[in-house]
Length: 508
Image (tube, rainbow, N blue to C red):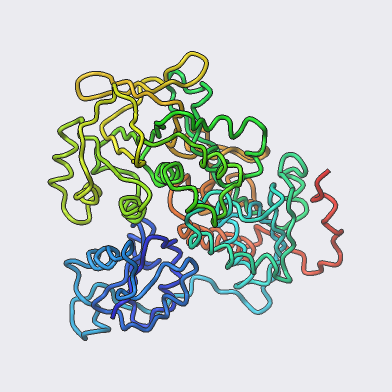
């Protein structure tokens, strides 16, 4: 019986490396790696060895015959990826093949006397930790890991939804590197406050910035700054107990006093927020959710969460695994608002593998938004072809005006969550591109700053899941090692000749 990859796939390809028959794709050397929602096991080639399940850092791989009721659709999801593709020649000895093993390539050549660079990595989220992993496992580098928070983990700890504990488990893999004898961990140290970019550059041979994209994109519409209009980044921080969400007014902004909340956006983050607001609090009790958030959810009046999307269901930004999980959640119903005839047509005409196809079988309803949300069983409403015009209210949010096929529609709500994407924040002392929200770089090398590198979303923009950071980090570390070889980055072989570095990295 074949294995199948399921919802919590992190795309870091740990499973690919251990598969003896090369039945997991896309692989890191294939052009579509990093562009698919997840990785997929070819059921025709799988030999049921279980090596992939043992290697998976997020417990996303199971035998097909052991899939739970909610995960059973993933057997078809995996198989569908291979529709029309021939079986590997390694299995049938046939030709043509979906993928051939090529000659081995060795992208890195490190001599036995390769110097041990002293590298600072700023940021302990997945991007930073994949860079740390590469440095510690494949070089003799000494690493100083710096994070502005008093706890390590970054996006894994404070960005992944609390009801996704399997995804959070990848931090267990990262945690062992934080105990490595060649790593020094400095928490509560903020670049720009406790230490400058120039200080770090002077104290280390190289510095890698993995500071992510922590700010929210703006809608640019009237009423966006009203109390009750909240960025999804703030809501995620609130229910995950982020230290930045600890000020007294933080939870008050997440207004749960009315029966309806509106989310602008339809990516995975929007689905996360909608799911947390709609789930039964008892089911969240055993998760890592903030105790304050859990208490507020227990007294919440929200019965209906509306997700607005500017475009149609065929262009939805969420991934297939996340929508499948949403539509099969036991705590609430999912409904598609067919206010626009294009919505139902797109769903009905969709083929397997298309985004709109995922909504076939989901209830459809032409909703009258002039009526308040009704009590009873909670539900999430997907409203497509609906552009936000104005967040309404005098002293605080009372609703949202959104475009319809014929005229604008007012949706009454006390909470409007803006989930339209993330944006990087510049680091004082480093170049910054305001248009892209990234630090300008070439293959991770920061422009105009020898020995300074970037990785993750601050390098490439807010795209790609957790696993995408692995290949991103490998590229950056490869650039660093090339610079050491070429002499662009100079190292000292006599570490004892350098002064101790702890002083500048203590919080004042």
